Length: 478
Image (cartoon, rainbow, N blue to C red; front, side):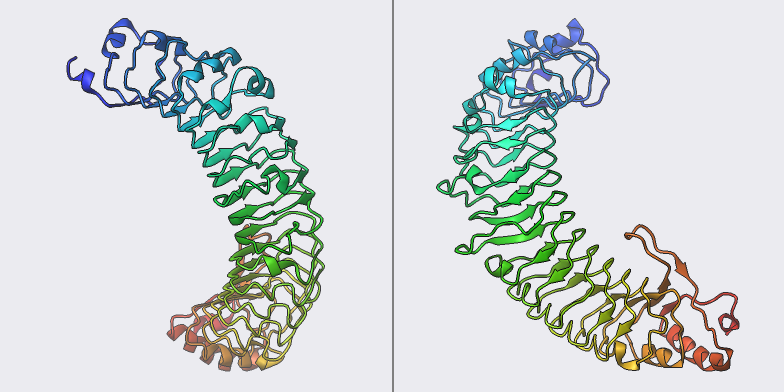
């Protein structure tokens, strides 16, 4: 027992504990205990009224319920606590007043604890936690968020308000959160979000990640700040978010996936220059101005898949010298022009699958010397090499995905055999939203030149290039 009194850390997580007998309570008088984890058990918190924790710093009581309302023990010593996790408990709203003892809290997890605006107004005063750095209020029943809730939380770094029913945020609600770095408002019911909620005089220079995924946002003002990530996916934006022309915004990752955006203005990105990753997939884009992306010289990842693009202007990707990934799949493209990709000298992965492409002009890929992966499957190309110059320039190609009905002839085999980097050629059956790839065999349809094709196939195989051959064709026997 003497040794037990010196215990610093005790973890009894997921032990199916339902009660603590008197003997165990005697052993529980750990005067030096600093870290206690009893999460995922079935204990009544009332037990803790008779357990004096003198030095406790971290207390984890995640999902510690027994099919009933949980009360926070009024006599639980919280004076020195810096981290408290009550996630997943049905907390009695009167109990929240006892949290006032924990004046030095730095991390507070109240996710999924039945918190409503009524509790904020009458029982839980967050402004008392002036040292708080991490606050999780996700999966609750908040409908509005008011300025007074976080009046004195100057040290807050992470604020999670996701999975609530928030449909209104009062102006300047976050104006004093000068150290805030991560703000999660995803899975709410917001429709409008203006920069007034941050207040232009608050200068939130540390704010780097904003998550607004799965709301009903139709208008968003990006504001003045420098971000690492802005996620506005799965909303109802009809146009690109507002960017003030007099400010140069840094947003390393901008996600606009699954909205209703139908066009991109020619000068939109002039003040969003330092974007590394841009996702505008699953929108309604039918037109992109040829100068829209010109200022995005740092861009490395561009996803324009699942839109309504029917035509790409020749200079649309000019200036994107650092682009490494380009996804144009699931559009309605019919033609690839020769100067479309002329500046993409560092492009590594190009996806043109699931379009209506029936023609590729000469030297369309001539400048793509760094391209490793090319998807052309699920298009309307019947004979890929109607013009042998269509795939010139792909000197570093490793993986080549082509339409299932492409006819391989003597000419394509000769060209492919010159690609020393090539590892795999696959004919791909229709690939639906990247769920699966059905690989079919490579047919040699004209017996008159089978012998010549076989020579080049064997040449490729000797160089360890993988081809999927027709198992029923005589060529497979060579």
